Structures are given as structure tokens and as C-alpha cells.
Length: 404
Image (cartoon, rainbow, N blue to C red):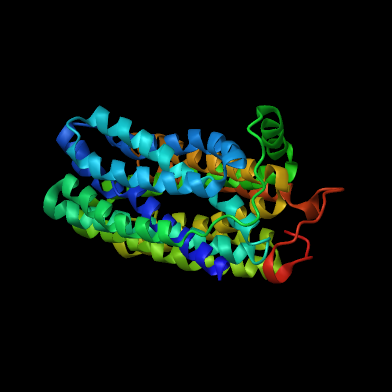
């Protein structure tokens, strides 16, 4: 019963937080027009939040080992929601960016702890399936925030769009607080920095974890670039799609919701490496479809790309949760989230700048390079390709099977 409550709570938390995190993305063209900004500058509204998340991930993951994860997660969700209600009333763009930075720190209070919390409280049972469900919630939350924000923003301005998403997220925030069960298995460590930092060092030194970290950095950089540049591309020639309709392109996230949950189950049974590489291949195929100026192919490619990315992300996150030793599990999850959101921040700003400077074709070539490097990192980190690496069960139904 507690396992079901835990999964339901983290699903609601992911829905609330990722809706808030990405709600401004379809509103970037409106913000750029109102404040006279270039695409890369307007993207700071997204990148500031993801940068705050990245910076806070490791400290929060470390402190949570001592004070408990539940307390931090509940406080973080409540703070993120409170800031969401403030954002639409801020009078200047720099202040908006600053508050978004703090909101990203709050989001880290769940995002940086979810992998470790799931692995610890479930006892490793079906970690791939549980992580897939959490990632599905993050995909659905990101999609909902973007669509609601974009559609309402086209009718009521960007402030109205942000308020609509804040109201929706408030309901999921209440469910998260009500459902999240007390911790059963977490062993708190005294807040002594030497052993806590030792766990962080172990998480950084493990060569098998470097693959998931690289996938988080490079894969997410590609993903953030696509979704930052997309509103500008669809509303410009030759497409000239109205902003409200352009926001519906984020329905592609439904593919991520489906593939992340499916990828977790398949990886539990057959191992992580084939599923992870398959996800990256789908990302590359999606980029190829988006190269042309045919709207149907662009949207179809976006669906393929999104499905592939979330499949790879779910498997990489579960890999970290299963591989990391108990004493460093929180820190390993935090390092994964750090690299993930550094990738998001850099992808948002650099990707927006690349698209504004060189256009879509050159940006696609850059992202293809990111995906190839991510695949190489996964291959090099696979225990089957490393002499002497210890086996790690994929989790759930595959307990005892060598990962990868």
C-alpha cells in the first residue's frame, strides 16, 4: 500500500513541478516581443530555473542524507507553488529571471531526491518500472504546463498563461503532500561533511555511472535545444503557425509519457543498454524528420524525438538508482540531476543562440553530435564492456540479471 502511495505521490509531484518549470517555454516569443529580446536572451527564463535546479541538486541530495528526504520534498513543492503565484506580477524581466532561479532551486528538492527515494523506499523492487512512472509524470507535467501556458497565454497574455498553470499545479501539490508516506527505510547520517562528501566522491568516481551522467548532460542538451527553438521556428516563416496552435506541438510529450514507462519495464526484463541505445537512435531519427519544411514531418519527427529521449532518460535514471551504493545513493541521484539540468540550461541558452545565428540545419548537426557522444559514453560504461566491473541487477523482474 505504501509503495502505491509513494508512486502516486511522486507522480503528482512530478506533474506539479514540471508543469511549473516549463510553463514559460511556449510564451518565449511573447516575452521576447514585449521586452525586445533575442531568442537566446528570452530563453533565460527557462535556463535560470534549470540552472538553479542544477546548482541545488548536489547540496540538497547531500543534506537529505542527514535530515530526511520527505521533509525537504514537501517544503520544496510548497515553495515552488508559492513562487509560481508571484511570477505573473513581477514588473521586470531581470526580476522574473531571478525568481525563476529560486524556483528552480525549489524544484530540485524533489527532482534531485526522487531516484534515491524510490530506490530506498521500494527496496529495489521494480525500480525500473517505478522510475519510468516518475519520468512519465515529469513528461506529462512538462507537456501540460507548456500547452496550458501556451493556449491561455495566447488568449490572456503570458501572465494569464502562468497563472493558469499555477492554479493547475496547486491541485497536484495538495495531492503530493497528502499522499507522500513517511520514510520507512532511510537511515539518516549525521550532518558531518566528510562522510557525506565521501559519498559524493564515490558517486563521481564510479566509472559505470559516468555513462548515465553523460547521457543526462548531452541528451538533455539536445532536448532543451529542440523545445526552446521550436516555438520560434513554428511561428516564423514558412510555417507561420499561431502561438496557441504552436503550443499544441507539445502534445508530443505524450510519446515521452508512454515510452518512459514502457522503457522501464523492458529494461527490467532485458537490460538497460539496448533500451538506452534504442532511445538515442529514435532521437536521431526524429531530428532527421524535422529537417525539412513540411509541417507534418516536423511534428512527426518531434514525437519520435521526444519518445526516444524520455525512454533513454528513464533507463539512465534507473541505472543510477540501482548501481549506486546505499551510502552514496542520494549523492549519485543528485549528480545525475545536476548533469541533467546543466544540459537543460546550456541547451536552452546555447541552443537558442545557435538557432538564432545559424538556423535549424546547423543546429541539427550539433545535436546529432551530442547524441553520438552520449551513445559512446553508454557503451564505454556498460559493465559487459568493462573488465572486472561488478554486475548490477536491472531491478524488478530482472533481479539478478547483469545490467546492460
